Amino acid sequence: SYFVQSAEWSPDGRRVVAQLAAFDRRDLWLATGDMASGTVTQRHRSTGLSVTPARFGFLPDGRLWFQSEANGNSGLYLDDGRNVRAVVNGPFEIGYETVRWSPDGQRAYFACNRRQPTHWEVCRVDADGSGLREVTALDGGVGSQVLWDSFRLSPDGRQLAVLHSAPLLPI
Image 1 (cartoon, rainbow, N blue to C red):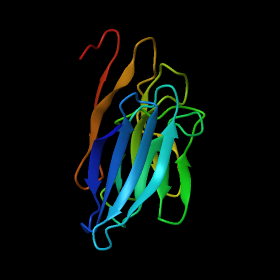
Image 2: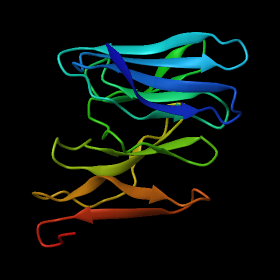
Image 3: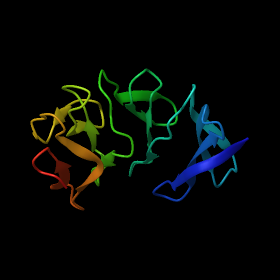
Image 4: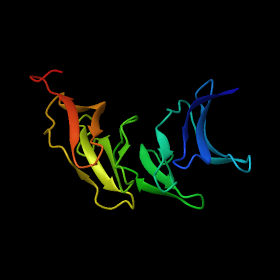
């Protein structure tokens, strides 16, 4: 048995993408529905002992983006309807529920732990996979981190507000 985890509309309202999950959390699907034709197409599938639901959606140009652990790391992928390609895929993690796209869909921002597993910063990458870099420098330390889902890109895409904590700087 499956249930709809969540869904998102395309910018033009012609398609919807839904994340379907098995009740035992061992099977997760992304499928798109075309409103005009009534067709449903599987776009991605993750299976395992415990599959984590991830963020997904459409870019302004209609491409589908999603997170997946398909290759062992939490990666970021783009699907144009013909090809799926990794924008970022390790050897580090992208925090679940942290991906934010610039208003024009040209850059993704997300929490990542490029330096070490416990050191989270906000990173940025261009949609073509180039230009990966950390945009915060909280300098780690024990317990210092960007909290997941705690940063927002301004509506014009030029500024970033970040909520973070450290041992002597609690939230």
